[in-house]
Image (cartoon, rainbow, N blue to C red; front, side):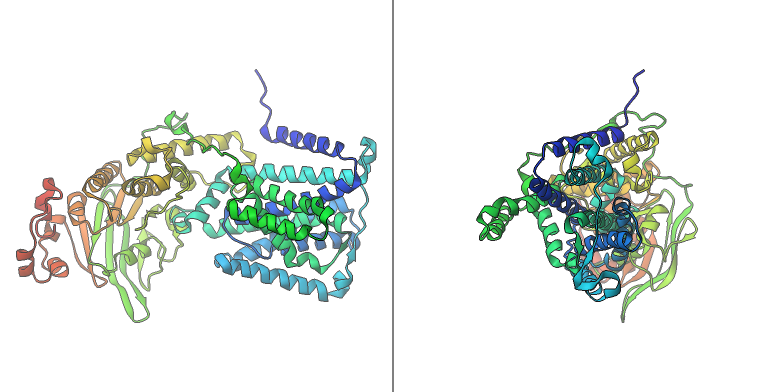
Length: 615
């Protein structure tokens, strides 16, 4: 029996061997010095790219973490008497703590506001370092003496070569760990949070936690880069918090490309090496470098890595193979006891100042039921759905799911309890395949620790296989099994709507709330959607659907609730709703006007009797 060598240790050995080979080829102290700075800058750019590339958050003040790491190491060495090489790993602790605080305080801002918040933080820390003379020595700077590694002489290296070796190994290990995080559950979560944050919440992903983890990891990595910069800088000054370092890291990510992990590294190495390469034209080198940067950004907006002919990864098809211990035909939703009240609201209302959007509405959804919610535009349907799913807190009333109150719960907690919603607009990651969209949405199938993607135990790999199988089942359930490899953004509109249903199913809901899934669909697409919903109901899924396609709802729903001006005016079987006087008045004016104005709809001939008067 052949023993399997774990990927992690093997990769670490490869990183160390490659680093040693590079260092052995560099005998010039000047070249080694230039490369040392370039590698530190690459590590710092990798940290910037973690937030910019994974979350899409632009940081103008990432030098705050760089400076905190450098000063933390400097103080541990000068005030604490620690050896420099022992103090460097500890630099990540204040960086991670500061990153978590920044995430909690400003992560809800996003966009330009997040960039300004980080810039403000860096400037505040620069002022603290400048004026806290007793600790940082202010503008005079803090001198930190670093002893060369003892073992470098035994292998025939200089102290500078030993320093470069440590930097290269650190960069390689950081890339290895981040590549595993990005390719695991945590990386999938970051992608969903970046592309569709509301959708991420609706399928059970705690977006705030995911963002805080990302910024904390980025802060720790940037602080580590700051700690490793100390031997190069020798004297630590408040300029470490300056905008020039933040700008260099951000521009390096843009230059290399944020989509691939290697992009920020290439950009950082370029920023560290090219200015020195151009030193022969010292008077013009910075200007020429700036022009080169502008040309690259203009011609390659996705960075240098866009030149690499990436081959789109085909969707993994583990789901097509039976997973040991599972059944590929098992239910994709969690069934409840038929007739049991699974979701109920009592007197819920929503006010926006003096406007009453929903007024004391009682709704009950029984297990296994397919409930329709209709009403004219502005009747409060989507507001009601948003309150039921946790995206909006009710002003009055209570909501229970399986007997437990959920009216004060966050959307991701509501989803964890079994209620998942879709949105009016198609919500998915347009750049991913249909299969990957559903796979990424399977967070609740097996919730993982943040570090699970790094360790990847046998149990983890089993759970990953089950996630793949579950994604394949969800796609097949909506009739998109043959479209698994298609890019979501290129699918026809009707199939994008079905993909939204599949994404919601990936969370294994007890109750599925659909917000206008038939909006914009033609007759054929509407019939296909109706068939999918009937099939899901037959498999035990409880569904509530809001839509304006009355023939479709009349044909598939067991019961229909009608809203008008925020009030519930009817709650009955489709045939009774079709003849309800208040419903006819809400849609068509008076009952007499309705009788003379509405022809029988040919949309769904088989169910014309259900839709008489409303079709």
